[in-house]
Image (cartoon, rainbow, N blue to C red):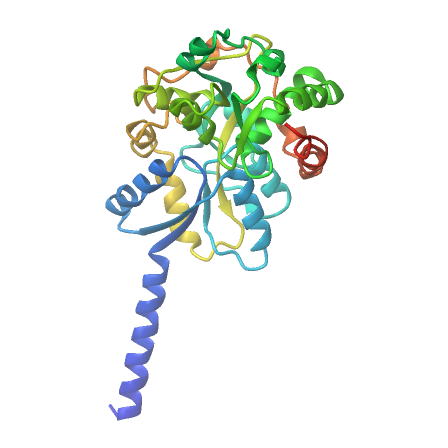
Amino acid sequence: MNPWAIRSFWLAAILLMSAGWAQQRVNVLCSPDLAWCEALVPAFRQATGIELRFVRLSSGEALARLRAEAQRPQFDVWFGGTGDPHLIAFREGLTEFYRPRAWNDLREDLRQAVGETYIPLYTGAIGFVVNTQVLQRRGLPEPKRWTDLADPRYKGLIAMPDPNTSGTGYTILATLIQIYGEEQAFRLLAQIHRNIAQYTRSGSAPGQLAGRGDVAIAVQFAHDGVKFAQEGFPLKVYFPLEGTGYEIGGLSLIKGAPNREAAIRFIEWALTPEAQSIAAKVGSLQIQSNKKTPIPPNSPRLASITLIKYDFAKFGSSEVRDRVVGRWTKEIFPQPR
């Protein structure tokens, strides 16, 4: 074999090996708690031999990132985060539906709610996470209703996530609109705003503030509050009497994923009971979508909660989301408090 042929042979071999190595990686846009995202990396590598890299962004930030990279996707899979942005991403052509082998093993009510748009990964409800010690020191009662949050006695004692960055924040906003109607909901939000100490970028951060005693009341997904209570913070977790909204956390294949084959292997793995059980091990107590995944004993049970009939189709519309979040940003956030 002449020298040029030898060089060509080895160059082709190197290129083929490089292509093979490139396929052995999946880039994940990860929206749940950081500890859950971190735990996926070694578990997926051990199960498949494929390297997992992730960037942790809240749901609203993740949707913005996907929109910005629509012409040249950098991620393969969007893992977790509230369902409304996943539905918006699907409708905008940023993600595509992939029907996993475990589809029929997923909870039927979750599948029916979202249809073939994104894959249900877990579910959980919005609740109140209250530092009982702070309230007792101030001689204040525990809020029981959404309207109680407008009581001036709670001034400076409430934390909620910002709906611009947090899917949790958007779920709260959508929940109040569905309970009260948009106009009354915005009047209530304006009253609650006067009592807000901080709007957080992520959905779980309000509970951390309540746990430390920086605020007395956090509004967020209840399972995150239970996690903080388990860590020893003096927190009580319960649900507003008027009813509350809930999420169907998503798992989506990104359209044009650069590592599509690895992405599909990750999706199939992420829906197994073994992979879904990782969540509870790191303190994420959502009810997982696979019916075969054990439910942690301290996870809030949706059957015991007054849930609203959450309109996923309406509030998973980009027009509705952009309009109501824009209205909140323009009318509520700038008001003095």
